[in-house]
Length: 168
Image (cartoon, rainbow, N blue to C red; front, side, top):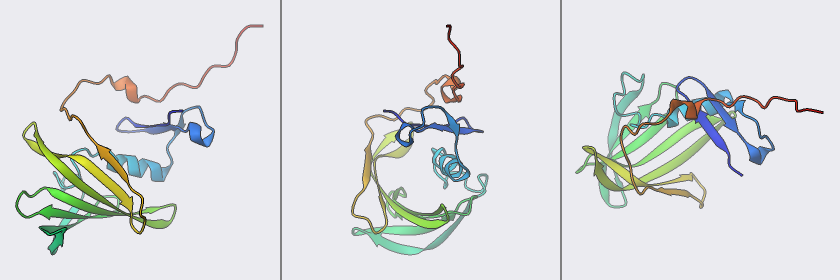
């Protein structure tokens, strides 16, 4: 089975076969907020003012022996993230996210690594996320990142519901 979450820049939809639903349906308000934040591929720090985000330097810290600047980012949605920026390379090596899901505060931490230069940017090819207080985590490792690859925009359009019928 394959689940799908999609967002075209205005509308979001999903197909959730794991929840017993095979037809496309609109994302909930919370799901939309999450997918809108996740669709910010260049992250909330780039052009933060234009995105309606607020950034504050809250001090210095250390992450696994590395000196870091600790930045508090308040997103336009009201959710907050703390970014830990390497003082030598100025890339984020970790960020903590706090968002409200179904009325309950949820905190996650994401560790970034294996930075490589792509198109003049240093980008992480490894991201590991865990719920705070949990021992389990999810890790994403990328083989390749490409910029401005042409994609047919209809790929993000919500599928039409199947038409009933058939012949007797």
